[in-house]
Image 1 (cartoon, one colour):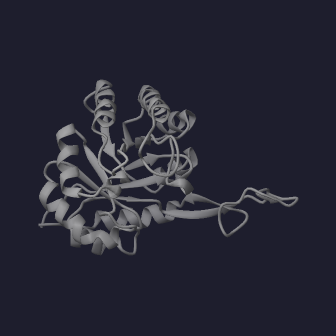
Image 2 (cartoon, one colour):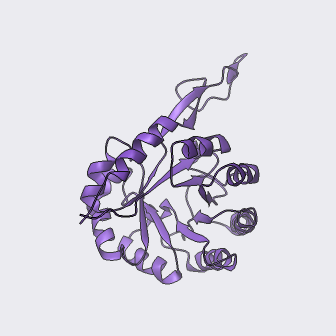
Length: 255
């Protein structure tokens, strides 16, 4: 048996979350805002502060709105400028996904963003996020993304949770794992990661390690800004959950 290079990436919605992930010894973070919407483009300040005060590798989400990934001209123009802004402020890579209205990759939009990312240095990472899980043919999509020059693909195996997509993820890893990094995410935690990694042979996992804090001003005077069943709670990364996940992942081995 030999120890392999394993990565725990934590999905963060703020600078606070990134600090929590850093304390938990995560290898990398995906920095977002609005995680309750699936993750949107983060603030520049959260990126700058994370790079200043941690040694984390930071992948910035570039997603201008909620819902799907078929972008009109105005949304795409915003994405292009956000990509440049994040890279100029120290982002180690960009996570994005552009599809057409039939659920296939928008080749021209994707290629332009990849070219921009790589123009900031060959070490900058291109990540195609879970827009991948909306495509009709994952195998052809994999081949197209590899040809375009994507470094990593975040996927749950075209299922809501990665543990439900084990069969496809295992097959994608077997067929494409030597050509592109496959990052498995959605629903992965300390309780299921050991079996998941053994079953799929995937060595990079993405997790929210989520807990909740309360802000007692969320609901006052018959006015509510709540977005959960708990009128006062908001989601945060939990350092203890990060540590638990990292410890288990680091124990995994493969022949």
